[in-house]
Amino acid sequence: MKTIKLEFDFLIGPIVKDLFSASKNKLVTGVDVIDDDSTLNELNEKACALYSACYEFDSEGGCVFNSELAKQHKDELSDLMSRIIKRLSEVNNGSFEVQDLTASQLTNIP
Image: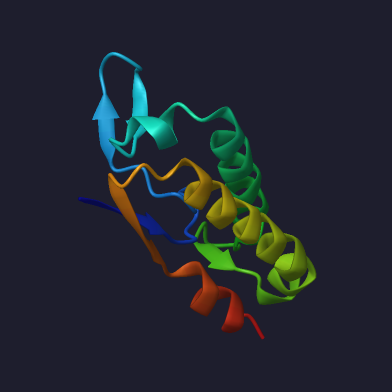
């Protein structure tokens, strides 16, 4: 059984896609019911863009997390994650389990 990791990171996730599919020419989870689901892909892209927007580049070119901006988006991110988790449950055919790290990440946003 494949473990699907949910985790926020800059330009990645929350559905972590860790395999490259040559036939699809993109990163995938390796679970077709997830990779081929347009609803999940749309929700994942929205959550990824919203979380990634909380990062800024400082004067030295380093990438830093803006927790004030994250605070403003916390409710929307939480809603998107609820919708993603619900949809994952709907499409789960027994071929994967979900490891959700986003709940603690959202809790840790001040």
